[in-house]
Each structure stands twice: as C-alpha cells, then as structure tokens.
Image 1 (cartoon, one colour):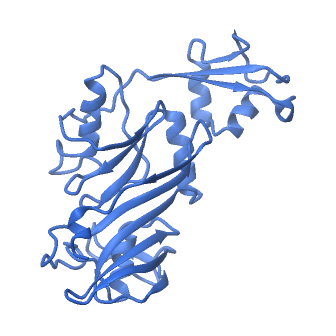
Image 2 (image 1 turned 120 degrees about the horizontal axis):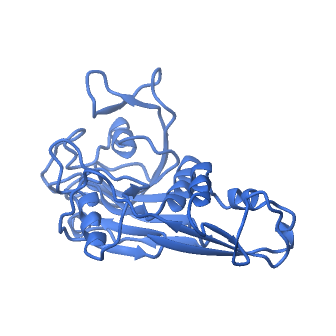
Length: 295
C-alpha cells in the first residue's frame, strides 16, 4: 500500500501547525508517529516538514502512507467476492451468507478476510484486514473494509460516534406493527459466550427503529426495514425476538427453517462520509432473492 494524499491550505487553516491540521482531518497519534518515521511521510510544498511548522495560505501538504506488512495468520483463499465499491482507501463488499467476517475456531479458510487476502495477494499488494462494520456469518450485504491505518482510524471513530448509518432488511415471523422504536438494553446471556438477551439490569443501551414494508398473510411473514441507532452484538435479532417477531431462519433465536435456510437479515444500505475525500457515500444492495421471494 502506497497512498499519497494532498491537502491545499486555505485561509481558514492558515496559522495552524501541520500536526494540528492533520489531527483535524482524522490523523491519530499512531498514524502521525508512523508518518514521521516514513521517508517523505509528510511534505510541505515538496520539502520534508516538521509537524510543528505553521501553515500558510496555498501551502501544499503531501502525506504518503506506506504499508508493506500483511495480516498475520490469515491464509489467502480464492473465494468469490462481490465488490460494491473500491478506491484507494476503502473497499465495500456485498457479503454472501455462510461467510464469517473474521477467522475463528473452525473457520480458518472460509471467511471474508481469507477472500480479501487472496484478492490483494494475487495483485502483489500487501494488505492488512481492517473490517469496519462486521456482519454475522449468515447476514448478507454491505460491509466496509479500510485499506490503510488512516482510513481505519477515521472510520472506526465514525462507528463510535454513530456516524455510519446502516439500514437493514429482515423477514420476521408474524405481522409486526407498522412502525416501532425498540429501546431495550442488551447483555450477554448467562452461561453463553455467543447468545445475547434483553436485560434491563446488566444490559447496554440499545435502540432499533423499524417500519413494516410488506406482510404476506399466506405465510404470516413481515418484511421490515430497520435502522440501528446503536451497534450491539445481535441487536436486531435480539430486539425483534424480544417484541415477539423473531427473524426466521435464525439458528440462535428462532431456528425455523420452513422458508429460508439462514437468518433472514440483509445489510442493504450504508451512508457515511468517505474517510479521506470527505465525500458523502450512499451505497445500496438489493434484498437477496431468498428473502424477496417470500413476498
């Protein structure tokens, strides 16, 4: 990875230090330290710059991010990739079901990480896997991967500030209300390392909004569109079960495989600010056929 980024200094940034300016653009302490250690890491008008230098109008700051390392212990595996968007800073994948985001016990060579290590390895490009919005194994749809530390840090901060807006689609058992806000804290279920539950004493604050898009009385199923206001593990699955309309095909919370062989949940839209260009990104993925066919 060799990414060069230019910044033209305007009147509003005049007088700021190089370090102060870059911090305002999302550069963490760790990234700045690495840039200082990189040959030609930070240039001012083509000349190596100290980070305490004061900026002048029309200065050109050039940052060069060089990453030659690869993620350890992630084997490259030739798996299909549906790329929704890619540039020098991020790649957005439309993840299929039955693909974990990260390697784990029993999943060493079937993950999104394995597929991306092969994808970049076949191009002779070093790659560190930085997944921003991890999806459950059987959840389909859009997930963002940062291609360098700067993008990863900025997007990670955006997740913490709830500045990445996610829209999901789910198929639920029963006829849900037309719309609803679910505010119920979520905690790890006792004696389980995976399962979560609503717990008003121990749980973390969690809020989900949804509207019903369609209802099929023949199979008593609802198609709902959901927006996460928080990002707890299994939040949609736990909240919908809590109000009595669990997702179908959910092996943990509602193992009903009458109509679908996996949990009927899809990450259909991501709206976020690009970590480097500042452009508003609005990415959409169609509802998969196994969910759509039920309506």
